[in-house]
Length: 352
Image 1 (cartoon, rainbow, N blue to C red):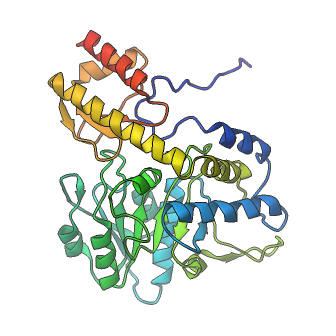
Image 2: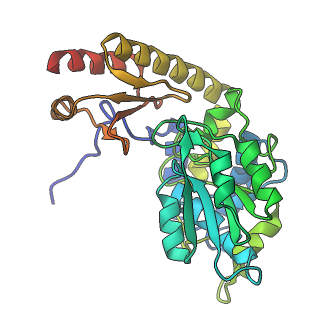
Image 3: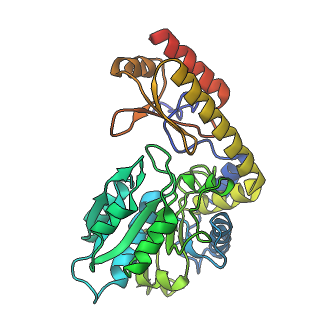
């Protein structure tokens, strides 16, 4: 069989994953064959997972956090909805989840898998409109969702207001900070457990955290929230399991710990400052060329490029995806440097 090589990151502009930190890569290789899904047998990686959760708690300002390392944001979001649905058993036979239109498509998957109605509220300036969300919340609402770093525009919802809405209506508040969670601690946004009565959060080390894929994260304010996920595991040394998957590779767990130990907080702070500056610079360069740009909040630039221009750039090797409205998305990840952006602009000038 012909040997395949992984795609180079040099011209990948729309991905929310990046090259793992060298320490994370090495740790992933060491723990590749371990299984944190069997903590009684694989005690070392189970201990590392507890350390990973503690470190994620530091990032999200949560002391004594509960949670686990997931396969990514989709699993964490599904599990958060599952917690909310299961805790509401006996209270409602028709549970619903209220989320902004900007919520990730994983919530659509969660609703389908779990038999929960998903209600999406319109946005205001690319962010959740809390008044519109409040109109959709009723006695059957089990979870209200806020997004801290939206996939399409990098916007941060008014999390405290969303959390207050959830609490007032007797629902859980879940924040999806899968991508933004490792940049937001170095901004003025209110988004974490210290800023609001958030119950659960998605935060992914394998995105801006620079762990190896897959390494997502689910955090809960209180360990009792995870009890809603527990099932018996009669043939394992452990007696119960709260994860969605059973067997899991310890690679993600170990790489998450290694990346956070290497980079939290100063390394992440430096990267956030660099990425924010480069996103602003890129937005300015695109605006000067006459393109319509959605101003960046977090380091993500959305720009309205003609279809023929996007296709010409793709032919030159640039990997670009689009928002639902059709703008090209440029996510300023660690591998997307000023040099990469300069090369992109040079090619943009050539194809126009």
